[in-house]
Image (cartoon, rainbow, N blue to C red; front, side):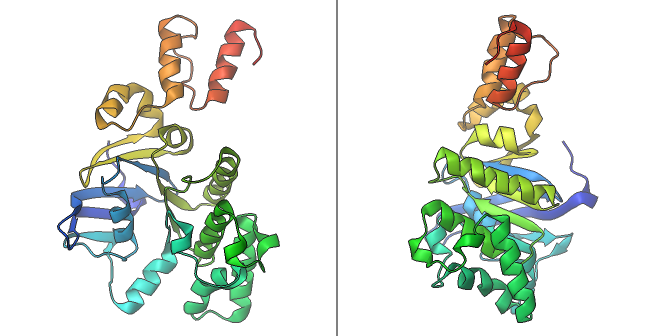
Amino acid sequence: MTTSQSRVILEMRDISFRYPNGGRGLEQCSISFERGMRTALLGLNGAGKTTLFLQCNGVLRPQSGEVLLDGVPLNYSRLGLRTLRSRIGLVFQNPDSQLFSASVREDVSFGPLNLGLPITVVRDRVEQSLAAVGMSDFADRPVHALSYGQKKRVCIAGVLAMAPEVLILDEPMAGLDAAMQTELAAVLDELHDKGMTIIIATHDIDFAYQWADRINVLEAGRCAATWDAIELPQVIDNLKRFGIGVPKVAELHRHLLDAGLVTAGSPIPRSHHQLLQQVSLLSGFRF
């Protein structure tokens, strides 16, 4: 499947990177992300997902290959990196590695203040970012007094205050209970509805299938496969080969189809709720 170059906002071309201890991060990895897309990056531990993200906003620099933003290679000068990080926001998996100010408001203010923005602009950005993640009432709370899920929200707010075009999240659902995952997914949906490009790494293929527009699979430091999310039911055997699991709802729908319990040609559901609705229409039984 080809990607229209005119829509590509972020691209990696033949990126290779090894850590000083010899550990492989990326090996001639090529991948592109389209503007306005919700993209999920899947892969086993050690596949290179975090390394790829650190390349995207210049924390790491490729040893070969290049990263391009809007078709232009990244500028690794101090000014170039500051500009880059105002356009591409990265939220780490562990919020404690990203939060370092005493209060929520101070932490969210840090990025835009470093951009040299006027205080009035910074204040407005902070208020808007906290509101976007539902943390306005916690603005003056000490960071250390927050729950794990609240810390993740503050990290996202801190990135949003930079007004990025692309939001990258490394395992955003890790460590969150079901209710917090639902709340965070709603935040991501609202940001996407406003036009933001969102890229996440996750081990949860059920969430990826339900949420994402596009799925990329990393294996041994390379992008091994790319599909539109709606294609996953047709590539279940390939998914099993990668060891990342298969969407449970797609697998269940296939079994129901084989048993004649759902109609062939009906839309393939992407969530359990959609599947239950489909079955209830056919059976007359309301779930």
